[in-house]
Image (cartoon, rainbow, N blue to C red; front, side, top):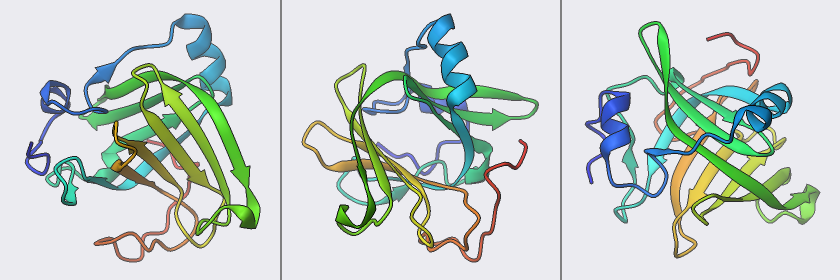
Length: 172
C-alpha cells in the first residue's frame, strides 16, 4: 500500500490499513466526557511501517493538518481539509497499562498502553522532554506500524523535520 501519495481524507478512509479508515465513534456520553478530559494536538510527522519500510503518510499534506485527540475511552485522528475536519481514525479503546519515570526503557516519561476496539495495541508516550510525544499503533505481530509524532513545546528531533517549535494549545 502506498501511503505517501494520499491527498485526501477520502483516500485514507479507503485504504487497507489496520489503523486508518477505522471509524467507530464511541457514542455520545463517552464522546462528551472524553472530549472534556482529552488532549488535542497537531501532528508534526506521521510514519507508516506496515509495508516493512518507513514511508511518510500523505507526504503531499502538511502533517499539522492532522489533529490527534487522545482520551481515556477513544482516539480520534482528523484531517483538516478547507474549513472542515474529517475523521480518518476514530476508535474506542481501553487503557490496560501505564508506566512512569526512568523505569520506562528509553523513554523516561509516561507510557500509556491501550487496546482498541479491533484488539490492536497503541502506546501514547508523553512527558519526556526533550523528546516529542508520540502515539504509536502496533500491528497484530506487536510491531510498530504507525508512528504519529505530536507537536510540543520543545524543538523536535523527528526525522525530516527541522526546528519545529509548537504549542499544544495552538488553535486549529
